[in-house]
Image (cartoon, rainbow, N blue to C red):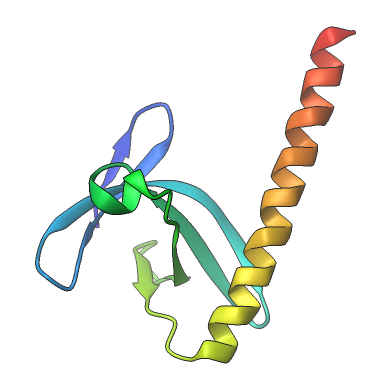
Length: 103
């Protein structure tokens, strides 16, 4: 995984078919007992379809981020709901910032 410093932080994922996919980091958020990361592909079919990739997120002792697949449907459902709540919070934050900028 590689971080690039642009307007937003990105990571490059190695997909199951051994292709690379550059993704923007949307948000790192808690759900249940774990942290998760939401990634938005910046290229390819997944980007065209506005797909979001969700992974379990951990940081190892040397600050190395680790992404793990979400294995169960129950965990994925929990994470999807938490991500939807995060999106709602992000929209609220954006509206609040716009109001502050107008004053």
